[in-house]
Length: 343
Image (cartoon, rainbow, N blue to C red):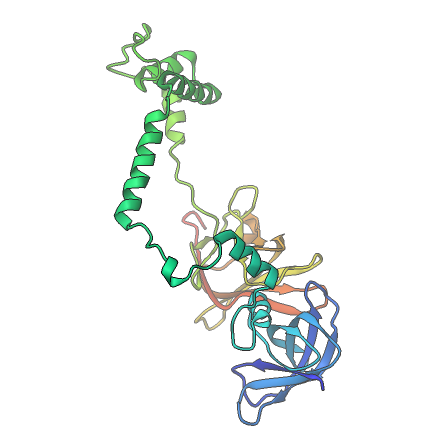
C-alpha cells in the first residue's frame, strides 16, 4: 500500500498540484501530482507515493505559480507529515512512534561504558554540594594563577613593538612615534625626547593630528534588513557597491541552497502615491549555501534616478528551472532620501 504524504497549510478550498525534488537536486522526482484536501481537516492536503524515497523539497503550484514549499522524508508506505524546514523533516522522520529519539544499541553501550554501570539505590553516594564545588574550583584557579610566571617586561616590549610598527605604518615621523611611545608609557622610565616637551604637548604636526583623528571615523554598516524595513534609508545619487563597502545585502539561513546560474532581483514600488515610481536592481548571489547572501549594487548615476519617498520592496530568486521564490518581502519597506545638493 503506498504512503500517504500529508501537507498542512493555511489555504483551504484550493486546487493545487505538487512537484517533489530530491534534496540538493534541480530535477523533480515527482511532477504535477494532484493534491487532495482532507474532508475533515480543511487546509490539509495529501498525495500518495509508492516510488520516491528519501529527503525531498515539496513545491506546490496554483496552476503554474509556486505558492508554498515544505520538506518531507518520503517513504513508500505509512503516513508522513511534511515539515516547514529541511531540519524539521529530518528530525521528524528520526523519531520513534511514541515521539522519542531512538538511540542505537551501540551508542547506548558506548554511553554506559563511559559513565559506568548504573548503581543500585543502596550504592548511591550523594554528589558534592555547591559550596564544595565552588571552593575546589576557587582553590584550583588561585593555585594556577599563582603558578603562572608573567614576564611583564616582555609583554610591555611586545606591546611597544606592535604599536610602533602600526604608527610607523601610518606615515608618522620618527619624532611623532617617539612622542606617542613616551606619552603611552611604552618605554618605561625612559627620558622624554629632547625635541619637544612631552609632558606639556605631544609635539605632533597638524598633518599627524589629522591622521590620528582619521582613525576615529564612524563606520556605517551596509544597508540590510532589520525586521521588515531596511536598516538605513537609501540616498539618491549615492554609490552602493561592494568595493566601497556599501552594497545592499540580505541574508537568510532558512532558505534552500541557491544553485549556480540562479538570478536575483530587488523590485521596489513607491507607496501611497497617485503615480507611483518604481525601480529594479539586478543582484548577485554572494553566498549560495549555509547563510545565503544576496548582494545588490548601484552606481551613483543609477541611484540618482530613484525618486525620493517610501517604497515597498521584495527580493526574488529565480532558479535555473525558472521557478521563483521570494527571499525578502513582498511587504518590506525602504526609504529613498533626496540629496541636499540635488538641483
